Image 1 (spheres, rainbow over the protein chains, first blue to last red):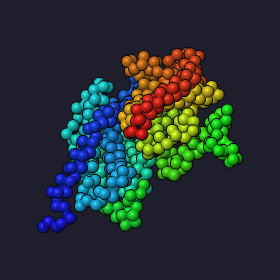
Image 2 (cartoon, chains in turn green, cyan):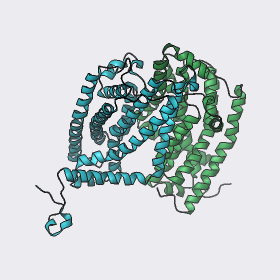
Image 3 (cartoon, rainbow over the protein chains, first blue to last red):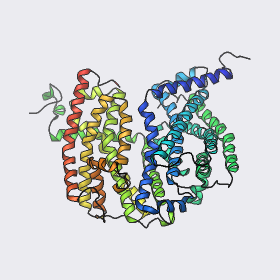
Length: 283
Length: 295
C-alpha cells in the first residue's frame, strides 16, 4: 500500500541510485583527484619498500619473509596501502557527506524531502565503494607492474570475495563514524585520526601478529583487519587467521549481519537527538 | 613618515598608531598569529587528533621498517642509523609540509569564506598576513617533532644527535626557503583555485618520493636520482639529516656538505623574495580581473 509522504522500496532504491549518480558526476569533474587516488597508495607503499631495500640490501626479501610469511613485499605492501585507500575513502565519503551538507546549509533541506537520510547515505556508500574499489584495483595493478611483480598471482577471485564481503561491515563502521561526526562536528580532525587508527589496527604494512595481545584483540574486532588478511592470504599465501579461508570468511559474514544494523541504529539515534535539539544546522 | 589609522587621529590619542615600519609589522604579525591560535583553540578535537595522528604514523612507519630487519620487532632499538634517517626525515617533512602548503590553504579558506577581499582593504601588511598563517603551526609542529623523535628513538633505536647548531641553522634556512615556495604556491592557488588542493597533494607526494625524506637517496630508482639532484629541497633533506647523524660513511649522499650548505643558504635567502614577488604578481592579476573572490 502506498502512503503519501512515504516512499516505496523501489522509490527509495531509485533515490539511492540517484545520489550515487550525482556523486559520480561530481567526481568526474575532477580527473586530477581520481589520478591522485591511483598514485597515493603506490607512493605510500613505496616508502617502506625503499627504506627496507636500503637498510636490508639483498636480504630484504628474506627478512621480510621471515617476519610476514611472504617474500613478495611489493604485493604485501601494495595490498595494505590499497585496502587502506578503500577504508579511508569510506570514512571520508560518509563523514564528509554529512559535513558538506552541514557546511553548505543543505542538510536540513535534505531532511525535508520524504527520502530518508539513510537512503541517501546508502547511495553515498555505493558511490564510495565503486570509487574506492575501482581505484584500489587499478592502483594495485599499476603498482605491481611498476615494481615488476605479477599482480594476478594467487587466488584472485577469493581475494575479490574478501573485499566484497568486507565492504558491507566497513560501511557499517563508517556510519558509526558518521554519527560521531554529526555529534562532534569536526570531521577533518576525526577522519584524519581515524584513518590512521584503522590503518594501524588492520596491519597496513605489517601482520597484526606483531602487535601486543590487547591491541591485537582490538584489531581482530575490526572488519578491515579480516579483509586485508583475507586478500593477502588469497594472493600471497601468508595464512588465514583460522587456517582456512571459509572460517575467516564466516567471521566477515558475522560482521555483515551485525555491523550495518548497529551502524544504522546508532546513526538514527544521534540524528534524531540532534533534530530534536535543533543541532543539525550548526557546525 | 607616519601613516595613521584615521584622518582625524590627532584628536584621538588611541588611534595614533603606526601602520608602517618594523614595530607595526611585528605587531600585525603578533595579532594575526593570535587570531590563528584562537581559531586553532576552538577546535580542540583537531588539536588532540593531530598529536595522536603523528604518533600512529610514526609507529606504522617504524613497524613497516622493522619487517625488513632480521629479527623483526625483536630487533627494535638496534639500528641508530636507520632511526636517524627516518626520524630526521620525518621531522623535516612535517616542517616543510607546514610551510609549503599551509599558506596556500589559508588563502583559499579566506576566499571560500568571502573574507579575502576585506583583508585587502585593511592597511595591514600582506606579508605579515601570509607569514602569520604558519607561525602557530610551526610552534605546534616543533612540539610534535620533539615528541615523535622521542617516540621513534624509543622504538627503533638510540637517535644520533650531533652538530645541533649547524642542524638548526640548516633547518631554519630550509624553512625560509620553503616559506618562499609557500608564497609562490599561495599565488598559484589564486590562479588555479580548486585545483590548488589537488596540485598541493600531487606535489607533496612527489616531494615524498623524489626528495627521499624517509629513506636514503641511493634507494631511489636510477631515473629518479638525477631528478632529485635538481631540486634544492633534496639538499636540505640530505644536509639536515647527515649533519645531525654526524656524517656517517656515505652521507651526505648528493654532494660534499660544504656544497650542500651553500645550496641550502642560497635557497633560504633567495626563495622568500622570489616567492613573495610571484604571489604579489598573481594577486595583482586577480585584482585586475576581479577574480579575487571567485573560487
